[in-house]
Length: 479
Figure 1 (cartoon, rainbow, N blue to C red):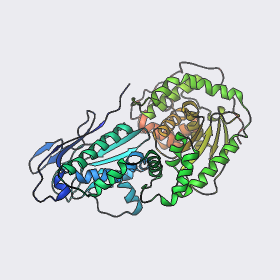
Figure 2: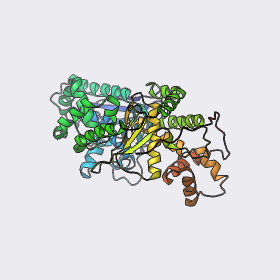
Figure 3: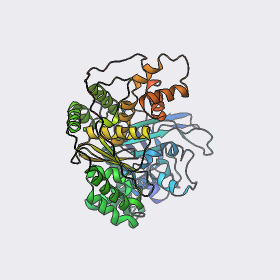
Figure 4: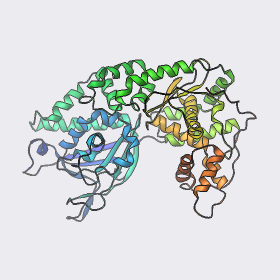
């Protein structure tokens, strides 16, 4: 078992330069940020002094103000998970450029946007449900600014609750310092007092609005009624996926689609053998499921997905070099939406009356449909609730399902075996042939090659499942 590291912020108050005004002077300090045993995020090089130190020096007021004014987005807006490659360089050389709404939203997650004339490390916070991913980059390339340069690089996952506690304690300390120094009436103090006084009902609304990519106080008003309705109608886990995926202006439409999908799922023919198979799989994978839901553990959701896929293939008696039939354990339907909103992908139910059913929001060709069915199978086995959504967001549950789908469709060991011992680079023809054999998309095979087979020096030898079953359950008729 691996426990989650914590984001630690430690500071030492200092006397400010004589030119620093008001709240900036009152909160002058040395600040060190670190995660577990990794080098501090605030490791800086001072070219003028020829030194490297683990802390940065300046006023903590701008940083505390940035945290307060972006509080709900920092803790609950998972949408930047789809934009990390874009956000990575958004503030490489500071802030000040205008990029419209995308820029406004991105600055809610990039610490460097706190700015206010001070130099902060390039740190990105991306909520992933019960965990938050923290990515930080060193200063590099031409930089017109003089002074210190941040050196650290890293990518770590911390517990969402512990992160909130660390950030809350930091802002409390800065606000307390302002009071000690007789500084009052600042925007930070007013904003933080309002957040601290937020009741649970209002807080839940703010979290839902943030998951939609909105600032709860300045952007949510046109959608307030729809947000309250969706929060009241959807169970907690389904609501989390819903708000993290749909467009704000489509809330009502998407709620109606879920109702139609439920009706379609209820018309599926009965299939008790399939129900029994899924129940057996859930029992066989209970320990993996327990590891995922334990809040004190840091099993990588992708790795848990891979482990679950191995367990299912062994249970079904399907070797790693063989194609796994994704539609043997569920009934599949399509209930198309009359508009384009790619956030909500499908609705599934482990027990819609007749048994495991998946309803997609648009038509798919064979390979993408198989990937979608594989994600659904993961939810059938893993989710505590009977009903679920498959969405485009990058929360921890969705990462788990994607990892499972990759490995169940195109297992890394199987790819290595099919390649044999490659004497050179893997060609596009190799990828397409393997994708054809497995009935998987070429992007699935490429992902497995890049992230597992080649990156981890996978052994190029065949393996046999440890448990073999004589029968894979027969296909169900698709609607």
